[in-house]
Length: 393
Image (cartoon, rainbow, N blue to C red; front, side, top):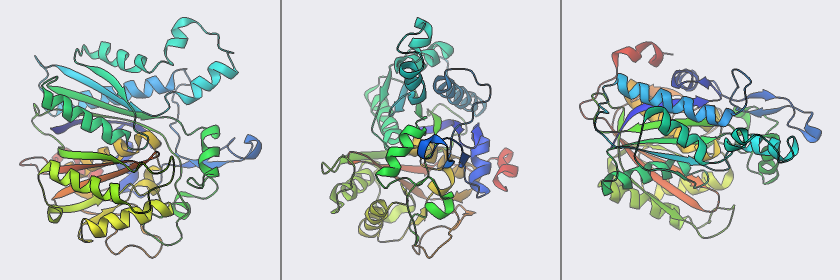
């Protein structure tokens, strides 16, 4: 299946171009936001989605905006929808965290029915299905920080089973609230009081952890398109069955997940040119992925790490990075965060020409959820002429 349209809402702004300009320009999406510290008076570094109009229902509007952009993008690239059954997979973790908080603490559980309905996980996908007249299956999936990869693999299963002709995958996480950040900092995973390049240095000395962020990302998957971004060859998921937070120090299941993904895609480890790591900048994540890079890939591929730039978008982390990879294939640039300290020898420093070849995207989620997805250039693909100015940013 091919990635045929991309839509993004992120800490960089509303649209895929702000994402591309931000990551290729080496600019972190996170900024200082008030009300996150002790007593909610201090500032914290967070990659929040900025609300353009202040209306209620930001979560649902972000879902709708990402979906609308991806569909319009696919149509511009020659997607032929007529007569096709389109399904929708929406991946998320906690849903509309801020609105649920207000429902209980501000509205005390009482609202007009139409305002209550936007809280339900079925509502955003129902709205998108109505907007575009899609009649295929529609459902929510959740796999912690691997949710975006889980959505792609669910879409692949639907296509293989003949349930759909095309699938719109949307992955959303707007949980970077003060309440949520407090607990991630308390667990030693997130860092709130340091800028992203000081806090988050995956595969580099001095890394402390991730900076929390938000995103909603839509990927239209179809082979009925003239100019796809990239192909999804296959993937796999495993579970450590070890701990609700900590990674299994043996890394057995993460390594097995990478190998199963290669087998599902029908390729060898030697065929992989790039590994886009989960790269949270935590010590246990670094150790686990270094083991995979050595054990499975013999430290041959170029390693890319985007979370110092995009922030850790939690349930949408994999999706925002797959969107970046799709744009990379289309525009001929490999993108990673700048290196700021002694680093893994294969870690890419900033932006460089994309040499082609296959990419394995790794994901790791709380509860031991591992995922790996294999991406490839689109057949007979060359960088889009229209993308030149953006690619040179």
